[in-house]
Length: 135
Ligand code: CMP
Image (cartoon, rainbow, N blue to C red; front, top):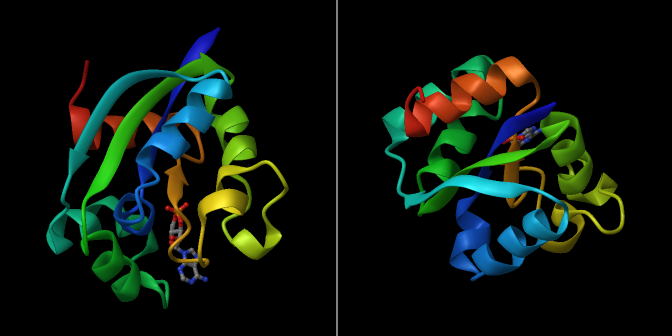
């Protein structure tokens, strides 16, 4: 069955003019872009999005980083979307990201890692709704 995942292109990648390159890799990877928006998160909104990480030592820096410049939020559609997209983006830490992945090509650090991808169908729905509302 076709299903969906949620992604963000993070501030470092937007700042360095990689929106097109990253969206191209997503489309070439078989994902259809069904929602797309460039926007700036306030620190409050970024904190809400990453609330699940609130107790992590990197949380405050993450919130600051994710509100430091515009991002691109998108909903993507493909069979097996969540798992296949996590394969396409590669490991959180770009030093461990496989050849051919988006993070291998574009991520700069474990924090500034170019893209986000949902980790479950449930979170994909929650995260898509956070930006685009229930549809
Ligand atoms: P993401 O997949 O969006 O989910 C949580 C984010 O926190 C992650 O990508 C990174 O941007 C950031 N992150 C995860 N682990 C670390 C870490 N050890 N140090 C700094 N940032 C991290």
